[in-house]
Length: 372
Image (cartoon, rainbow, N blue to C red; front, side):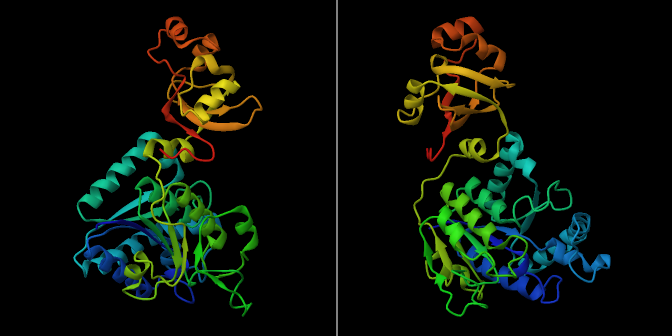
């Protein structure tokens, strides 16, 4: 059965011991990915390594520490990195494509949809997309946490069957095994909890690149929320991905198969949209949308704030001023001010709107799980 896998390769899994891009390590990853692809599966590669590939060409002896140095190195290294991947995949007659993304691509609904359709078309044509954050123009350093969070978000967007986070360690340990001989590897984690995040030694795995173990656990939590199970471990050879996807990987599995996925529009609302205002609702409306899975009607609205237009995303608050959800609003702020507490029929007559709902159920997400 054809499945879809997201494979993320971190900087530490591609860098030489003394810095720079290791083509030997890169070829090792390509061999494993190509084997999976030849078996009929779809694979999307999220790859770091642009800075490692480019900094020596700029005259740096070691990886630059400044943002401008890293961005310059990424600008030089991105082409080198892609060229190395192209040469390696050519050996298997596999075509690759490059996508460079930044966080604003995800926050814009049109760009977000374009990314989805582009990736779907590439996969349909048996192309392996190679995705990286556009480090050279990113406003904030490490926007996605060394691509870990980017990999999690892409896995949700494409409803992947599994997200594989390759690192330089063979799984998650209770402490740094190089310093604590009694440290134990955790083979399976059912879910990522706050106590787990606080309890695991975040210093373990000093060569995990800029993302670190905390970044991977947070990315795994997001992937699970989006319905995608996760594997964290090392690349041990050409057959490693085949073993991982059949449950025989020698790392850490997080979550289980069969998680319920979010539909793409709700993913965008929950994780990427910008908030333009807030709507406070009464207890009856709260009961209807949280437990009755209903749309939000004008009659349930008791207060509004912000400056929003139809199609903008607002937060939904209960009477205790707690955020219970988000959604795309059908009315502007000025129009909604006129119809607070009215019936839908009255509201439509006053505003001339065709929408009975302030926020339709299909364009709403509820906190703590709305898995439709």
